[in-house]
Length: 245
Image 1 (cartoon, one colour):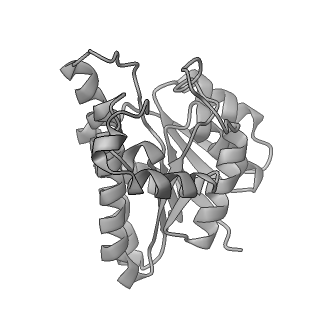
Image 2 (cartoon, helix red, strand yellow):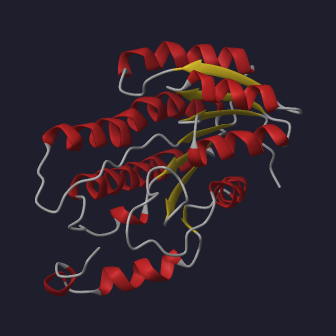
Image 3 (tube, one colour):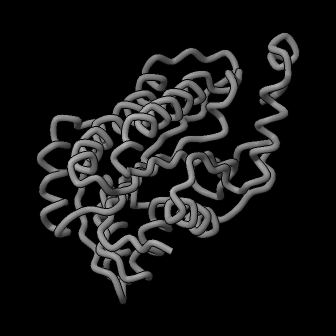
């Protein structure tokens, strides 16, 4: 199995991102932890016993910072094998709420932040003719769900963007992996109704890294969500609109 020695995890201060960084470090990788909560990332660095942790405080909505920061990180790591974009937000949206402020935040963090970072990675990987890009999308982007329209839209956009990158970069030997989690036990979903098949961030991170090592195109986390998605996509819209999803 291919080993990633120089990696970037964006959104590394909590949840899946933190678990990913910890597991990569446990495998001996040099990991750049990128996120807003420096204290949380410093805790990960302090616990690292094998790999080398590098901490970079950054808000993914500060797009103009990305090119220079990406180059600095690649220099500090001595190269780059893997980048994972995990940053994402899903604020609670009431059934009758239409908040442009919340919707814009989801688009800016879940989509535009990903594009800003992954554009830089793609340029580098195309030149080096190697590398793996992983984007954390969601099963929520597979249909237009009534509960949080902008969140589903942001994940559908990210999924399409990653597919386009896969089609563009495959000729250069670059792997692009789309991850579609179901319910993961993180602050994003904690306390929300209707949760089932809930798994830990650590379990999710393990599945994601296995998918990255294998260079798989699209992976549902856990895998049973693939069958749920297949069923949901087959439901006619006039029925789907009445489902509590």
